Length: 259
Image 1 (cartoon, rainbow, N blue to C red):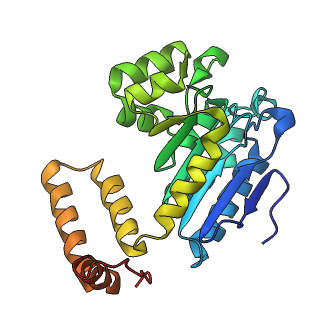
Image 2 (image 1 turned 90 degrees about the vertical axis):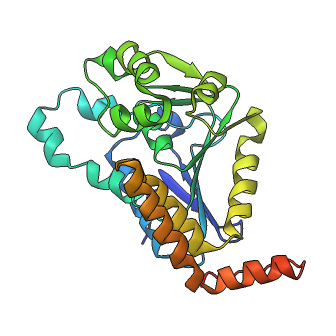
C-alpha cells in the first residue's frame, strides 16, 4: 500500500513504526486525505508482525492544529454524515499495539483527539492542547467529549470544551492528559526510546494490558476485575511468561519471542 506524502512512516528504529503527519504548510490540519492516510498507516502496522510499538507525531514544530475548516465551512449535515470519518478514527482506536503520541506545538481539536487515541502522550514544554471547536460554532466530533472527560474529569473537560481555552503541557500533565513533559528538543527522542523499550517487552501481555484497560473504562468495577483476572490467567499459557519468570529466577535477561 502506497501512502500519500501527507503521512510518512519510518522504520529506522527496530520493531517501532514512526508515523508522521506531514502537512507543515497547513499546521498538519487533519483533512480527509490525512485521516484516511493515518488509518491506512495504522492498518499496515497492525498487520505487520515485525512492529511491536507505534509512535504518532507531527514532527518538531506542531502535532496537528485541528480539522481542516476549508473542507467543513460550507458542508451540510448530510455531507458530513456521508464522509463517515469515524471509520478512519476507529482504525486507530482499535490498534492492539502500544501507541505513543509525541506532541510538540499545537494539538487542537482533532489534533487533541488524535493524541488521546494514543496510550501514552509525551509532550514538549511548549505543547498546547485544546478543544476550540466552540469558537467556530460546533463541538468536538472525534471523541473529545468522551475521551477528554475520561482523562481529566468532568469539570476540567467542561472548561476546555465550553471555553475553547488552550492548556499548556504542564497543566495538561497536572490534570492527567499527558504522561510526561520534556524539553521540546527531546520530545521525539523520549518517545522513540520509550517505544523501543516497550517493543522489547512481551507482546501478548502488552496487548492484554491495553485491551483490559480500554474495555474496563465502560464497565462496572466487578466486570473490569473479572476481565483483568481472565487476561492475567490467559498469559500463563504464553512462552514469554515462562521465559520472563525463569529469567528472573535465574538472574539473566529474558529473551521474549512474542509467543
